[in-house]
Image (cartoon, one colour):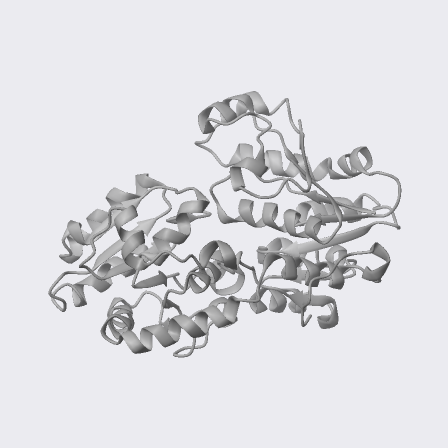
Length: 417
């Protein structure tokens, strides 16, 4: 009995989904399951642009255990010469080709016995269901985002799934709206490797190692600056400095870590337009994962200033939120439904109206001005996530997806699932 994890996405990727998928495969393997992650081979020019092999070693890239298999597939050799990073058409064509061929990939890679076909790709799910999935195999759909139109259009097919896992209560509502039974949906937010983020180095040590000032309040944003073409709220954070720049003897510094750096000049222009000195903002490109906890620990407060867009309201279960909390840093985040799944205002974080710079400044100042309150927030935030490991998340997802998990001889961790 084994798990075939199918993903038509680009690997490796600096986006959070890549780490999440690889970490989930590692965690499922930790339970004693036989796991193979199957993903498309990179196009030659794509690999050269990224500076990686066409068949990359994700184990090394993401620093996870080598306890599961990686299998790249040459999905669309006829498309690969047409690769261009200037257009999204090629990427969508390759993802759709991967989905179309997913039945073939399962047959090619499936060993004897039952298999769990695990995926986050809606079109892989549709291809499996419409292509006549083998009745003895289990199709596990873990949904991290889905557009309303395809969901509604394919509702009769999607309802044939036995169960689904979603990352937010907003996504659960989307499936309820197409008539999917509530008892067949499990809401399971993302997780965190607590030991990686609850580092023993002090804030001062982290700042010295990262060449950050010791005498200025540091407001952190650690994550991609854009996602799926959407602005993630950094302009709101910059505009909040209008109300903070004269408040402290040493002016606050916003540190945004994650790239891509081509957006930095736009953010500097936002600062110029609002009268915020450029020296109050610092941008840092994508960092290796072992360095990320230090960037978080160096901050007085970490932020998630997501705008009130559908993706952030319904779908986003940001891993950086769990990582901030595990790092023991107070968190200020946009008051959105997906965030409220995790944070309670004033208890384990502060929730602020999105895109309201004055309100953001007030929340940040509340933390900077009251260290006791900040410490209480950080301690309760850590309590929120201390047991939210990737292995426990994998155990809950697997137990929900399969009818009789005990027959798989899985070594489940202690959990309240």
